[in-house]
Length: 304
Ligand SMILES: Nc1nc2c(ncn2[C@@H]2O[C@H](COP(=O)(O)OP(=O)(O)OP(=O)(O)O)[C@@H](O)[C@H]2O)c(=O)[nH]1
Ligand SMILES: [Mg+2]
Image 1 (cartoon, rainbow, N blue to C red):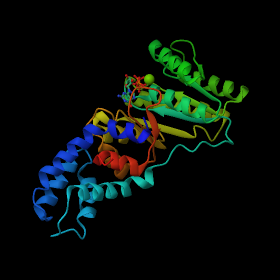
Image 2 (cartoon, helix red, strand yellow):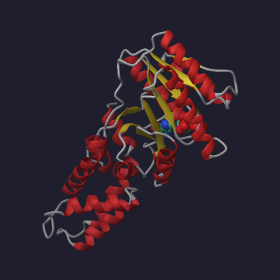
Image 3 (cartoon, rainbow, N blue to C red):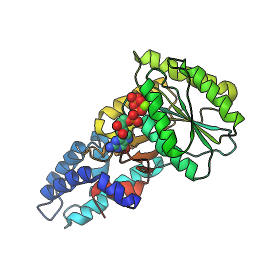
Image 4 (cartoon, protein in one colour):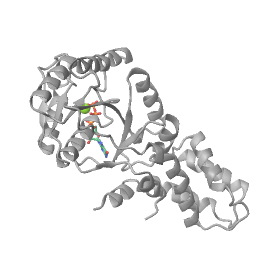
């Protein structure tokens, strides 16, 4: 299946909800105030958030008042507005080949898909010819380390682990040294999603960052926040909290398959202006791809 097909089918719950809403609203042929208001409400219900929904609808309505408009044109025009919001943030992680290694740290609330996403990225980078290593800095749960090892096997890359309950930062430091010695191009750091409290988590992430800098002052080169689309508007408060505790450089949104809340990506783009690197639409290793503004917008509107 092509990525676009996979994305569109992943987003089908979101797009069906929006399409149905559009059919219900556009029963009259000419665009009027009432329809505009209903459309705005529909987009809010589709998790775009109030400010973003208003912006999209304003852009959409321009020049269309009192004119006849077909459903397909509505979807096309909305996709175009949404695409304009997404375009500036659709940026893949830029691997710097001069870094040895380029360090990517994955952070986010537990269960959001950090470990899975790292496995998917490891395969992609490996296929691009990079020598990839992963390190398990979620040392408190034995299962977390094993899970990363399984992904390492699938992706065909080395996974560095420490003793159980080892200090995550010391594991990260050892991994940096090993990555240097073995000439790795990319080091992917998996972190814990849950600690006792926000302060502990902040300290742990800061400490990992600090020790990595001892070996390369420019590392970590990317600190990527993984957000789960199924949490809808909650993703905003998570993004805000993590921005407060870590130097987030970009976002990956997972679980866009099987949720009707795919619109949250548009709200996140507008609210945080952080690069959105990739989106996940399934649990398999190939279910992650670079974020493409136009494709995503079409997928969200259910345009083939
Ligand atoms: N449907 C779907 N499931 C996903 C996606 N990404 C991850 N998952 C699933 O989400 C669950 C949690 O993923 P993990 O990768 O373990 O999440 P995590 O952030 O590492 O969690 P912690 O290690 O507990 O902090 C797993 O069952 C994954 O298979 C996705 O894009 N789509
Ligand atoms: Mg994990």
